[in-house]
Structures are given as C-alpha cells and as structure tokens.
Length: 385
Image (cartoon, rainbow, N blue to C red; front, side):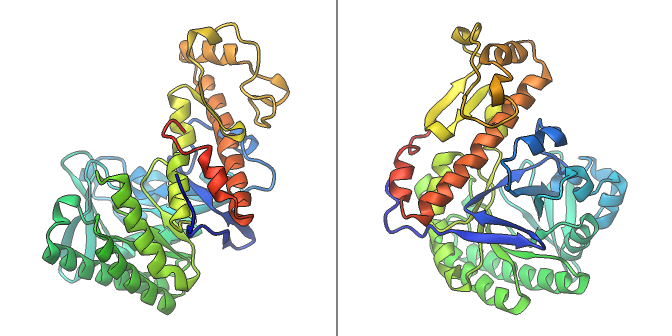
C-alpha cells in the first residue's frame, strides 16, 4: 500500500484539561464501558499518559422495547446511568454518536415541522429521535462531544441523482436544526456529521456545506458517516478523501465512524486525511481468541491453537499490559481459560490487545510526524492485520 502524497497529519483533540494527539482510535463501548474490560483492568490496559476516546452509541441506551415510548432524556433517566460514572475514569473523552440496528441507513420521517430520524430497534419497531432529544441526552450524560443527527443515504439510492440531492438538502436542514438545539441547550463539542452515500461528488458537496456551518457554530470536528454499507474499499476511501479535502481549510479533526478499525483500514483512513477512526478491533480480536502483536509487526497469535497448550511464555515479553508484564499470564493458561469459556480469559486478552493497539497508534503518530508513514504502513498492509 502506498501512502505517498497522503493527507496524513498529527493533530489534537481536546476537552477541558484532557487532550489526545491524533491519529487515535475512537473505542466503541457498551453503555460507557469497554467490551470485556472491567474499569480497573481497562485502566491498567492504557499506557501511562494516554487518553482514551470512547464512543457512546445512542442505540445502546435503548432497552430494545419500543413500546415504552422513551425518548431523549427520559431514556437516560429510565436506565439511571451516567456516562461519566460508567467509565469511572477521568482520562476518557466521550463522544455521543447515533447508531442504527438492523438497517443500512436512517429512515427519514417528519412529525409536523420537527426534524426527526427514526431507526430500527428490534427488527420491526422504530425509535424516533429528534435533534432536541440528542442535545438533551448529550447534556444529561455530560459527554465531551456530540455527533449531529444526520440522514443516511443507502447505497441503493446512490445511483439516483435526484434522491441524493434531496437527502443532501435534508441533511443541511438537520445540521441547522441540530446546531440551533445544541446552542440553546449548551451542548459541548458539536461534531458535524457528513453523509453522501458512495458518491464522492455528493460527499464533497455535503462536506463543503458542513465546513460553512462549522464556522457559524464553532464546531469541534467533522464525522464521516454512512459508509461500510457494502461499497468497495476503493470507493469508500475516495469518498473519505473527498470529505477531508473539502474540510481541510477549517483545521478541525475528522472522524471516520462505522468501521472495524483494523490496522490496514486505519492506515488507509489516515493517509486519506482522517484523524480519528472508530474501532472495536481489539475487542473483536479478543472474542475470536486472537492476541495482537502489533508492536513487533507480527501477525495475530491464535491462542486456541493446539500447539499453545503447554506454552509457558507470555504473549509478548516486551508488552507492558497486565497480561504480559513480568510473565504474569502464559499463553497456555490463556488457552485453557478460553477453552473452558472462563470470562477472565477474554478480559485478559482484551486488555493485552487494547495495550498493543494504543501503543501501535503511538508509533503511527511518530511515523506521521517524522514522515515515515510509507515504510511504517508497508509492514501492516495485508488484511490479516
């Protein structure tokens, strides 16, 4: 993979006294907590001085029972949860995002003059969320950043120019409505979402409008949404490049939401000008019994393989995670825990993977800063990474 003439850069995202250099991962959470990682273990899985970025999907806060008619802050009060208390850490920057379940795009709806978006919750029922609901929820949950409400553009509509233009116009209305609600409600860190299907020219037009809106509302960042819905990787990153070029003049960070965040995918996104990539890669790998070895540029180690049964070595002696440090847990013992389906096995593996992933991003930032991204990326260009 060549990343010459790339748009890669070292940037920074900050909230109050917290700051994190980018490129950086936006870790997908479940109700504020990282998958498989209790809070104390998550803290031990974070290198000293690092600030984690957490994504809080709105759909996670729904009980998947649309009959309760919960909306906005009522949803937050019903679950009696706080994002800040759920993470139990001061070194976390929180992003509130909208997620769909069981559909490849948002389903538009208009109730009177109120702009709302509805999405599938359990295959048949839909949860309706308006701009004010999202703004109220962001304030109630005390998140650091909030991604604006947007209308998705499913791929089967991308061939229809009239439909694309109509949805682009609707997104512009949603942006204005959300910005107004955010300003009235005192929402921190507005992140403007950019949609556009798999059409780079439409993405560019929407992004140009988002750049203009950002100057009016003092936005904090842009978020590229609506990809990873069946388009090819080449088409996807053409769309990403169209957006990053359109908003480059604002100097604001760009997020890419929706993907798995595998290393080869991160490198393509960073080369295209993305600063923050949403990812659940460390936890998905742990669930599949894979131990990452990114710091040594080795392929993931399949812990469940039979030859690891009597292995007394840690996954990586140079790793500082709670699993490897001082040879605390051997590969053979990890295999035993996974084989008997002991939950601590996946938790220890997730802690190791998160440490490796965050250290890899640190090395990636150094490579970008010293203009060595091309040689750095060559070691991780294949899909197994």
